[in-house]
Image 1 (cartoon, rainbow, N blue to C red):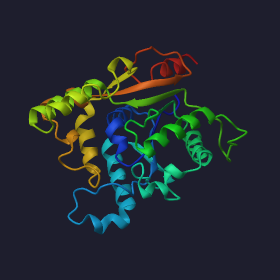
Image 2 (image 1 turned 120 degrees about the vertical axis):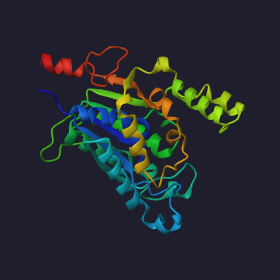
Image 3 (image 1 turned 90 degrees about the horizontal axis):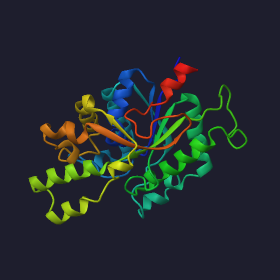
Length: 289
């Protein structure tokens, strides 16, 4: 008998598709319990694909909640919950100072909220961001801080006592999402050939992303590429139609976005150093138990 599967902790509505959409769809279709916890409501940022963005800004959190729901339906049988914080916006903006912003959250309170969700869903695999949050957004950085602390403290009953019906639970495996350097280079070559970027920009992008040799797990999600693209489009207010991931020539879609990369941070089970499945070492361990 296996335990329920995967919990991906993300910063905003749409982030779940950008870095893990293929994995979410793949494992959901495989029958794993697949859960997304979204830290913030997405109430900040630009508004795309609306003739009058100002008209929907007062209810932007509601709009983005509807969009993430639609995204989950496209990806498959994926559950989604909000952690309950406001979008902090970009670093240095006034929105960073909002009392409900995730960037202003009390660390212990945020960790406790996530721990209770970990105990409720009991995932075997947990996904968060790297220390820089991928690109330095304060909410992404805080997903790393809160996610890592919650993984460590999930069995700490002194500081995080059990609620009624809870049992201690620590996910056996923890990963960071990773944007592979090979993908950045492929994107940049396509954009250079189309004239979207200059030669200088193309050269700078050659050293961006995580070196492929540092990525411990590449998951083949090629069968889910169309579903991932459709789920991205569900985030209508956030992702413009000319965004680079939506404008990859169809012939290149599978080769460029047909796999997703992760860096394994901790594993409480024996697993290969290089994996092609986030559940490596878990199913074998369960079968032997």
